Image (cartoon, rainbow, N blue to C red):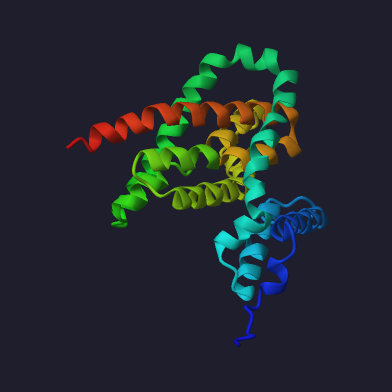
Length: 241
């Protein structure tokens, strides 16, 4: 009889172990962020991702096991958590309504540039077609990116990875880049972060200013909705047999 057990067997028997591990990793990242004075480079999401991937590799746990033993619940929580963004939006509803026309124009232009620039860069690097169809969703929040990527012939997992990496990069760089560009308006900063860095950028803006967080949540939501409409239609036209 073979009594050799995989190195992660003890962990795999614990209920929701990877949900607990993921929350713990994020809490550690949040603590380090506070200790670092809130520096964007000390990003709790980036720290949590790095820790969880390192542990999975060290214990030889595959992604399917991670999802089955609690990790998949993180994705299920994203929907209800997003509803909380309605609070700052409600508090700034009058300001958002007054800026609705330039806001929509900014979302359309920003979303189109984000998708086009990612596609162009990947094409110049001679990326495979499936990568091209996945990377165009990088600035759309992960749940929408996954669904649309599958619809246009991309890979859901790849689209999710691009979306998460874009969110982390946007969170780390947005404050510095906006300051370098001389953008001081909180609504403008929030909208830029929401369109480019979606949920993670919005979370960052909420820690800085409620108005910025409100505009970021609007930018994130509108960009996801509009991209889910125009991008599949554009891909279908470009790749028409």
